[in-house]
Image 1 (tube, rainbow, N blue to C red):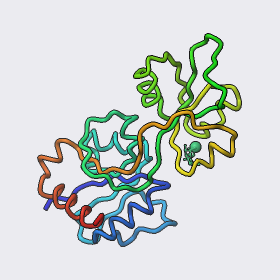
Image 2: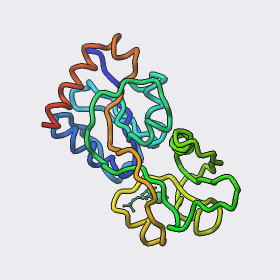
Image 3: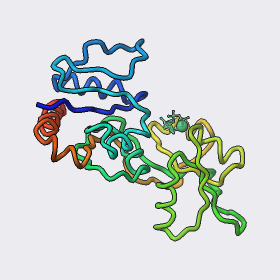
Image 4: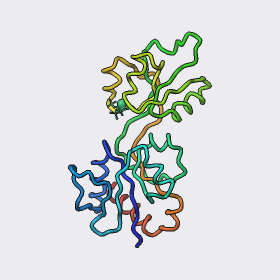
Length: 208
Ligand code: PRP
Ligand code: MG
C-alpha cells in the first residue's frame, strides 16, 4: 500500500489525537514531547505524520500536501476548504459563541464590530441574521477586545467557559458545536483509495 501523509495539529488536541491513533494500533516510535521534529513515520511505514499549526491543517489537506488531516471543526469552517469530512473524532469538544457584555449590542447606531480568530464564521453568522458587522481579525486573547474597546462583541470557541467568565464577559449566543474531525483530500480519496480507506477503517476501530 502507498504511504499516506497525515497532518496533525500541534498543541491542545495533539496528545489526544496521538492516543487515538495508538488505540487504533498506529504507533510512532520516535515521537516524544521534547522533540522539535515535525515529521515522523509510523513503525510500519504506512503513515507519514506531519505536525502543522492547527489553522493550517485544512490548507495542507485541500492542497494535497497531506492526504488526511485531523482538524478542528472551527478551523475547517473558517478555512472553507474543499475537502471531505469523514469522521467526527469527538476530541476537543467545545462550541462557537458570541460573547460580550450583557448590555452590549447597543452600538449607538454604529455598525456592530466583532473581533474573532474566525472572521469568516463570524461574518457568516451575522449575515444569516441580517445584522451588518465589521470584523476584526485577531490571533488570540480575543476576550480582551470588548474589555479594551476594540470591538463590541467576540465570536470565539468556548470550552469550560472560564476565559469568558474570568474576563467578565457573558455568552450572548451559542453557535455550532466544534470537535475534531478526520478530513481527506478529494483526489487522494480516489487515487490512494486503498491506503486512505484502510486508515479510515483503522481509526474507526480506535473510536469504538
Ligand atoms: C481558546 C479560545 C478561548 C478559550 C476557551 O483560547 O480562544 O479563549 O480557549 O476555553 P475555555 O472556555 O475553557 O476558557 P486559547 O487558550 O487557545 O488561547 P488564544 O485564544 O490566546 O489562542
Ligand atoms: Mg482564547
